[in-house]
Length: 461
Ligand code: PMP
Image 1 (tube, protein in one colour):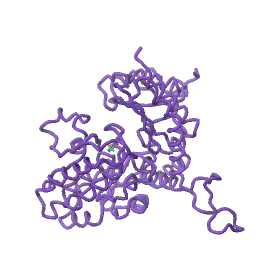
Image 2 (cartoon, rainbow, N blue to C red):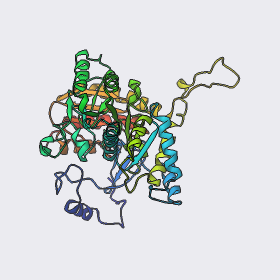
Image 3 (spheres, helix red, strand yellow):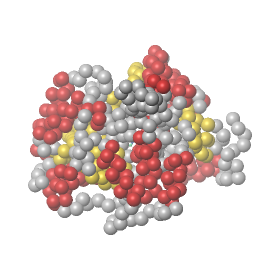
Image 4 (cartoon, rainbow, N blue to C red):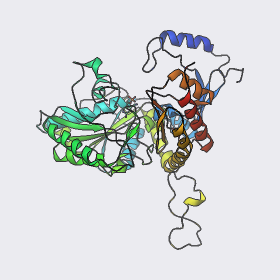
């Protein structure tokens, strides 16, 4: 451990932590928090540098967001260039190139049929906007009875009130909010397994559960393929196709919340692609700006937009809507994701008859190549962890690795074990999981895997 504090000359770390404990709320915490946070001084690449000089590989990508890691020169330049023009300007009555470019790019890269983009501040707000779009659409179409939402159990959609109403009732602690949250329709959670054959009985229950309530439903909202904060569970794309069919048949809209899954994380650029389905409304956030600034988006089809607009305006307009700094860095982040991966030999296929032009042919984009590489490293590394005592399940999809215990994780013990192994992890419930930045190399992933194994067997001292 280095003795020279990188923050030397700045405020005393001990004093900062003392003030933090006294004044600062942290996520899902009491005051003071049960476990004191670690003080981060800076971050670069995949590493967080703590004020005491220790360096940790970030196995969390700052909660799914920092796909390019930290202090990426291209993203840094995008922010500083934009700063030289304007940091912010209101979006009512004004527009600007970063927002126009971002909206056009999102339309281009998301599933076909989504053509209109509402930019907003955070994932939860984009879910609020998506729900509002659906409620206004149904009202404008003369179906005032369609005011409720349906979802499956085990989901998570954010911490503001309407999103909370469609979170899993137990994980979302609905008992605290009885009489406050709107009562939504819940069907059973999708059976586990991206690769497992679809469960026909569940499919029938799913379709029936939606059809039975269709008269009162404005929309169905789900996280496609991966239920994240609700339990890090993966499901088969067939359930999404069934949802698409039953909602379309009953004038119910379909919202996909891809705030966590978007931008390559599951091995497809958007998880909806695994099912070949376009929802009526799509929510994006987190990795949208490469984790640099808070920004989210709700995209919708022309039909939804026309329905709402026939009835008036979409009644939403956050102060920081379309923030230019956030849009500029989002544009740069998406460009990096879509850039061709430098072509390793096995990827270069001759295009047509081998010619004098040398090897050519499709090279996978950077995001896809990185996610495949991380997926392979996680699969190989985590397989033996399944045999550790107390481990109930190990699963991997794209650049997501999950170790599920047969008991709740002891957060302080697990965190201490991971930090001692040089990795930042943030387990919850019975889950130790990782979704590394896409630039994590094989050594980084191996270290993350070792830290997950250490966290899995860590016991309170
Ligand atoms: N939906 C999903 C699927 C999420 O994972 C999250 C964040 N964990 C949200 C919505 C809420 O996003 P935010 O924290 O930016 O409000």
